Structure formats: C-alpha cells, structure tokens
Image (cartoon, rainbow, N blue to C red):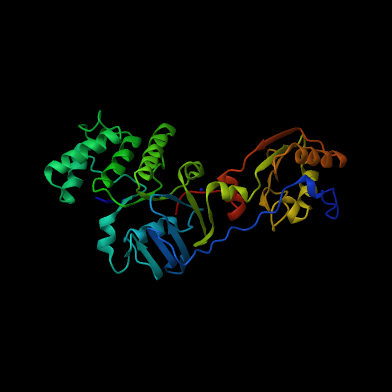
Length: 369
C-alpha cells in the first residue's frame, strides 16, 4: 500500500615519522544544512526518546528529489526510528519534519498518500499469489480495474516476477519476497520510497537484484531514503550518505567525499612478527596529526582506528593513509627501514565506507537499530 511496514614501544614518541611519510590533513565534514533548499524530505532538530534513552538528538536531514540518500550508523544510531517518524508511524518529541511539503505531524494522511515504506521484513500475504498481492494493493488504492491490471503487469515485468506471479508467496525465496514487497509499495507510483534495510538476509545474487531495482527507481525520478547495514550497498547506490551516531548526524557527503577524509589511498603494511608490528605502531602513532590523518592522530597497539591509522594486532597489519603516489610510499617504507622495522608485505587500496565507519564511530558498522 504505499506503506508496507512491516554498518609499546620501542621507538620513542618524540621522534615521529616525517611529514612525507603519510597523508594530507583531512578536514571534518560540515554537517550544517543551508536554510533554503528544495528538499523533498526536510528534517530539522528532530528529537525522540524512549524513556531515559535518547534515540534522536537533534537530527537535520535534507533529501533531494530523485536522489538515493543512505542512512548509515552503528546499532542504536536512530536510523529506523527516523524512518518510522517520517513514515508517520511514530511521533517525534521535538523538531520538525516534512515529506513532499507535508508536515509529518500535522498532515500524516497527506504524507501517506505520497510515500511507500518497505520495512526490514517482507509484509506480503503468504496465502495469496504474487499477482493477488499486487491486485489487493491496487484495490486498496482504489485504482480502476483496468488501470490496476495494467499497473500489476508493469510491475510483474519490471521486477522479473513473471514466472512466479501465479504461485503462492509462501513458496517464494527470500529474494523473490523482497522484490514482491517492494513492488507492492510501488503500485500507486509513490513520490518517496523508504527502504529500511531492504537486502538484509538476502544472498548476493538477490541483493544485486534489489540494487538494480533501487537504481531504476532513482532513474525514474523517485526519491529514495535507504537505511542499510551493508556499506557496499550505500557506496554503490547512494548519491549522498548521512552517518548517524548517538542520535546525531556526525557526517554527510557523497561516498567519495566521506572516503576522502581518510586520504585517497591507504597503505596496508603487514609485519613479519609481533615485535616489528609493535615498533611500527609506536612509530606511526607518534607522528603529528597532520602527518597521519586528521586531528585525532596516532593509532593503538590494541587494535582499532585513530586519526586514520588502522591497527590489527591479530594480522600484524597497520593501515596508513597516503596520497597513493610512489614517492609517498617509498618514503614511508624508507623511514620504517631506517628505524630497523621490517615490512613483510605492502598493499595499496582505496578507503571504503567501512573505513569511514571505523574512523567516525570508533567501531565497525553493525545491525540496524
């Protein structure tokens, strides 16, 4: 209907590596939003608490028409709560939110007329066929019989359900159910689609299928707000990403802009033994913030992320931001060699949104709240 409801040291700290060994400064992402915008979804100062637990603590968000905007954040960051407020399933404690110009608090019925919500679990009737689920949605929207039939045919073709439309949904695979669930939400041509972890639990092939569907939605001008625990998903689909943590938006930008916080490339250094690893962490971690990656500076021998320096004691591996040039990598290796620190292996890779999570939230992305 449109609403289907249901990511030691031995080298002294006073002798850091020189500036050429690491990366350029990374400026913090500005989370302020302009006052004038034509955003289809507009959120300002949104707050929500459940008892003593504050889930949303002053969230600002704009989603442009025809774009895919991803919400990322660790468990309990408030992603699902935000979507449920925008879909009129919850009331905010404070702040304002509008969808397609309609205030979600004052005009919930008007909001529901222009949205579709696909929750984390498929909400289709297992005792009906796929086609019957689509026709039921059309009837609930009071579509004329002929229009309903044409629309159902369009969706069956678009979502590759032709060979299964006449089968009971209880015989569908997880991927087929998810495709049908999204299709049901599109019967009435919604202006805005909310997808709350649409590919959770799907196999890679089914996930790819859903990604193709989301891509087509944006191409057709539909506005999509997506929550996901798959960082690859946001990287592939999203025009913009907002990172939530502690109930606040702590960063926003395109996937490439967020990854640029950690440098254009990362040098992954693997060390032959624990002693070499510990000395490397101490040396790299002692470098000034501007030379490693941002204001936090330094790494930790216990594993984790700080200032762009990633450490993995189990694998004896350290990730160092770099500009990716041969000169920078040679200097980094030469500096370590001058200190008598052996490096067993070097790999260069571009930062991923996983790295952004580690840098911004101090831990990996987890399941949705």
